[in-house]
Image (cartoon, rainbow, N blue to C red; front, side, top):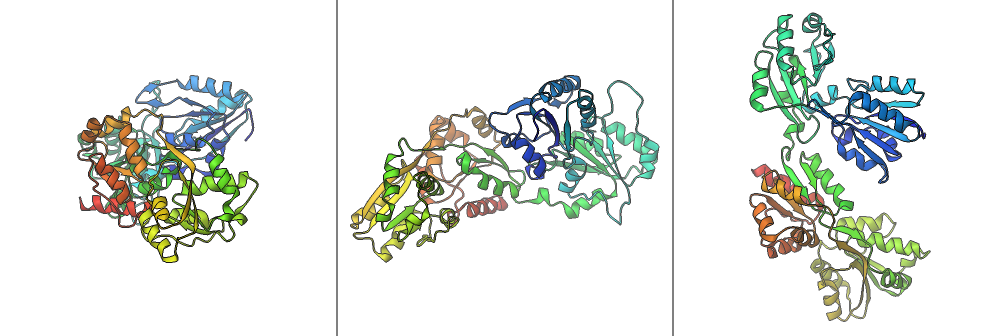
Length: 506
């Protein structure tokens, strides 16, 4: 990425998975990101923390900056910085990218165009509408549903579109839908031609209204459909009944609050999203280093003297290994030390380092691990447990009762996040959240520390509470909240399956 260059990057229609690899690469090296209303704000997370982020969106006729102002901004920032101009869809498909490129060319500023997945193809696909089909059409046209506002004569050849093209895709045509339908019918298109209007396509908020040229305007009005939306006209719309895959996913239309630590929320969030859920990230814990590294560093230096090294979380593995490397050592120091891990993910973190795990309990909690250790004997054995600063003591206490020597050292600590929580509370109180997930006792305890107890318990009425296991559920119960969803195996994948089963029953 070259300094003093503007990159016109297509962000795709909304689904984060439709961002191109080149677009992500440029965002990760950007100094300035200038982005639109239709560009998914999640993409901003790819940019460096220190990058300047400038919103220039246009929504419903309300412009934060005119196009002329955007052009001036691109020139100003582009002279000295690596600038990503992030645009929804494809910058050269009704995205005014051509105009912006001309301005940059005239100013002598180098630019690069990174095509994006255009909403014209992606949105119908997510609505179950193939734009081409041998039995329905042999031609496709993309048309703006919102022409220039300066009163110039329309550039749309209605007579040719109406009779000469099989599938028509209109961008941003909701406000002019009545005029579009009237023009098509007036120029020869049959009034009973199928039509679909898709709002916020490819996102969990996707909403689709179908009808015909003669009734779609009234149907859209009754549904309260607002921009942004794509309109598809043609016989292929009828295939939606058979091919509607996106909106038929088990959690489509459900909003789920994910309370896991931000560093670890991606797996749960992504898995829920793949099932169709709209996820709101609300980390109730942040993972930070312990108050002092000294206890862990002493344990790392003497790790070869232990019989067992017990990890209760992926975080414990991560911080232990970081301090091992920090001391100039590596995993060879663990030769002869047996390893135990609570949870499949914790075991996987060790296995990725080339380490063989001796015990992974059937149930992913301390009690089950104690059963496994009892089978091999713990008396007079030395155990090292790197874990959170504050955690359940049942494991070390029970080992000591069985005559084991146990050193518990803080490898990290969990703290309350600093983010405001007013918007989350408002969403819960308004009934906009269908489920809240808790993946540890810490997430539960901190969740209730962030709100007034009575207020949040009231807000959770009617919201399904999903806990990853019985220990987490017990903590929720102590706060006066009943667990509605709990998997039989205490893993993220099993939790998601249990959530799908719960709402499937509804």
